[in-house]
Image (spheres, one colour):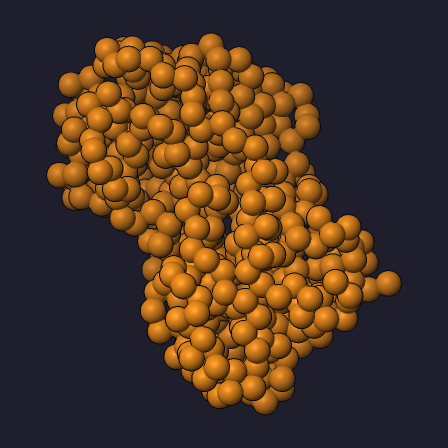
Length: 505
């Protein structure tokens, strides 16, 4: 029996499609159905590596977790990782197929439709319900030709659509009406209702606007989901992380005993979820900074991953970041590089085949005795390693990099990888400076390990003579998904949603 479907589309980016999809995945799973998420094409610099060493968007990983199943690239067969303002790396079924500019990719998309539908069909054969997420807005007129992620895929698999809008951004009713006006008659018929997301206040105040919207469009409002801050779910995975990270966190009363961490907001920053667990720790103030003069009153500076390490390193040098980082390093501030940030800390990055840029090489920060060469083959693995930096035991994480880093005579590895994608290996990773204040690694998700995160924070507190604190950010993911599902179940007419799918609640 072919699975039932429901598709979540949005009035634009950042309206909460990913989190609503995750909530529905959890609700249907809790109701006894076998459920899987699906997003044909995802544009994200936040990615994940499956057990098979295949790369996919993190949003579908979160949704798979909400379903209680293992993530698979069938859930996100096409991933776009922007590497410049006009180009991106195209990843199909977990493996890169090349870099394309926007025009080239637009022409290439029709060739991907058969791959996308094959992935969906496999999920539909194995599950009772497939919850599908769209991308951006279905009303982008310039993108509708060759579309493989919004209305074209909905029509291809005959999926009913619910349109989500973010009222917190303002103008949600205009967005709903405008989106409907730009759809074809067949597409309008496919839209079965609206969800208003991120509402603050008394719902009764919305009733006149809801009445107007339903009368104007002849479509029901299926629910109003309140704005929340107490559920730890990754909400967005798009290339631009402004709604998620752009503004500094507000610290109403700065505590002198807090650890102050600054993460450099690179132009092509990737995998910023590496620092989610640090950011949520009590006693930690974590900020994303865009200007070199924001590197002040700091205990730790982190240089994150990048989809274009060489160009981002050039930007850091031009904007004065590198001189500031070196200045703070001399003062004893801890400097950490993850993946691309690790490469930047070295002596030189070489790109002989011009994989990332037209530059053949670039001088690094010279804070670590390493040299990196960009290779054609991307390395993507889930991994396990022994921590030799803080002796915190075994750590889990994943690797996504095209660089191969060679350690110099004074450099010693700080991690011993013993398993990659299920295979036993013996690979050395990362290194540190002589005083241990500067270190880097290719391991993404390293701070998600409670033992490692605890040892790291304890070391910073000891060096700064701050009072000790235990870890506070210990939480059960399952409970968070249940909290999300309960919130949405209370806010949405699930009986109507089941009816839309042809099921009984």
